[in-house]
Amino acid sequence: MDALDFTGRSVVVTGGTRGIGAAIARAFRAAGARVLVCGRNQPDVTDDYFRADVRDPYQAAALISEAVRRHGRLDVVVNNAGGSPQVFADVASPRLHAKVIELNLIAPLHVAQAANAVMCDQPGGGVILMIGSVSGVRPSPGTAAYGAAKAGLLHLAASLAVEWGPRVRVNTLVVGPVGDDAAAAETVAMGRAAAPEDVAGACLLLASPLAGYVSGAALAVHGGGEWPAYLAELRTRA
Image (cartoon, rainbow, N blue to C red):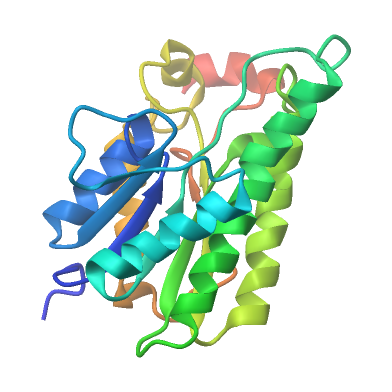
């Protein structure tokens, strides 16, 4: 039996219409899963799409209900929707701070609550994954509210894992630079930024039986991490 075969499984990916979320959705589909993605903007392909702003608890609950309606159950939720513009904290508006925290921390909680209500009562339980960030475990100048929200997401996942286990496993992926980031090639141990597919592969692993005893954990998906600035000279010699 292939532990990474998700045939017949039902998966929801928030923010799954582009970027990392789209790669996660593709990976689960390729593994046989039935996937429902959501976003605020409708993509060209709509058969596996549900329009929802997950900052609204009622829309978050409607997303989960729609997945169950279409697929009969819910096995995996990936809380991927998030992000923030680059704005220094001393000039960012209170409204921006509130919206960033709402999207990156409160919205995943809304989705997770709705998902747990389904998963806790179905055979096999379920898995909830939070897409976190290295911004939540180190200083995040220019995106302070985002970093704080991602730090909160780590704590939230750890707490939910305790509250909702053993029926529901909850884990966080601590993701480093993704995409075409030239600076990452010079600072990250792996010599490159992550591809969206790298994050997707880690999601498959954590959602699979191979990680069946992993809950409340934070998996670093950051290519080994960044060299400290004070060791820059040493880095050039390595």
